[in-house]
Image 1 (cartoon, rainbow, N blue to C red):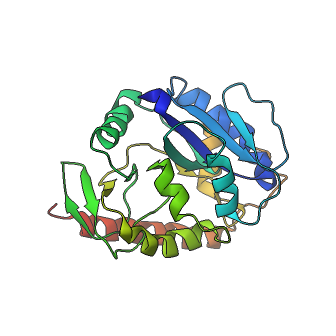
Image 2 (image 1 turned 60 degrees about the vertical axis):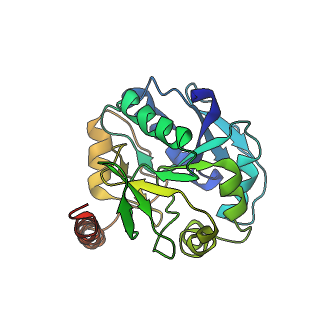
Image 3 (image 1 turned 90 degrees about the vertical axis):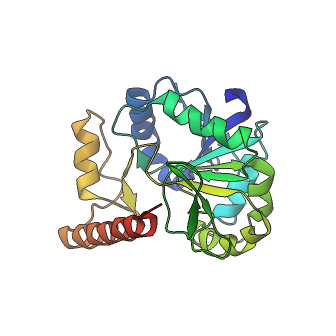
Length: 245
């Protein structure tokens, strides 16, 4: 099963400063990761000792880059994540594998290992099916995909945000889009809109992972507070959405 899943960490050369600390977070908290991990690059060929890279050359958009990357791997399932999502807690590999196995055994087209604000129906204690015509039906954070489904839904000129909105509409032609009610993989979102989150920097550096803070700005206190408030409101909405399910 593990050989049938490739983890693709969506990135590009402009975020090169995140690659080594991100790799360190994986080595520290998910050293027994059973899936081959690829970082997408344009022209850079980084010297990783845990990650691998997929160099695809010039890209026209996030979707174009991801599509080119996916076509380079042999595995039939893609576990999609991002270059700014740092691990900060020990990952329970067996727990993750249970969800991956559930998705494959039940022929799911998509299973998000992080909850999203989509209308849904309960399937198991921690898994819900996403209804058609619901928001963020194909949310990308920690999402497991059938490769051919993801390739079919990607449009060459779309950003990740465009894909989560417009791609959700296109996903209505597919059944079996599921997500979890509570996160399966703990992470901290290190960078938002090109800037380091203040609390994320503290979390990452407290784990003895060194960051190059000269390459990008750190959020102002006001920016960080605004983001955190939005995060809390998002979590409250998810709680209400899943209440009673």
